[in-house]
Length: 99
Image 1 (cartoon, rainbow, N blue to C red):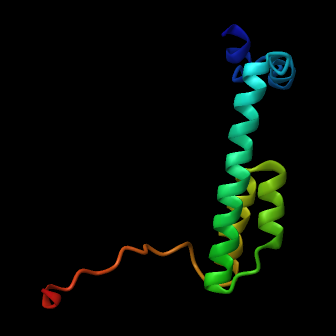
Image 2: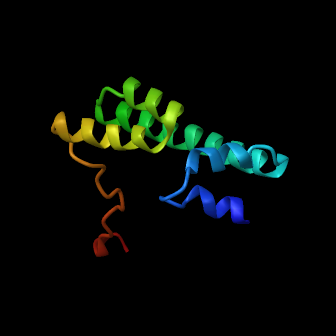
């Protein structure tokens, strides 16, 4: 547990702590599944959002697959620069007349 705390210690060497934790198979399994989940689901969401709203996404999907969260930030920045805005709320309106 102390090694895990070292990863988040700004006065220490977080990279060395992370490398040290890679010797534990359980940590590697957890980290790999976490990263893979992020890459697949967030990358897919970015791609589908781009298709739906006509936004260029290859650079965002690539960055998401390489280093994760910055790819999502790049997608949001691309949305803003292209004038499409951040993803709108997709909750449908409820009409009382339909009943």
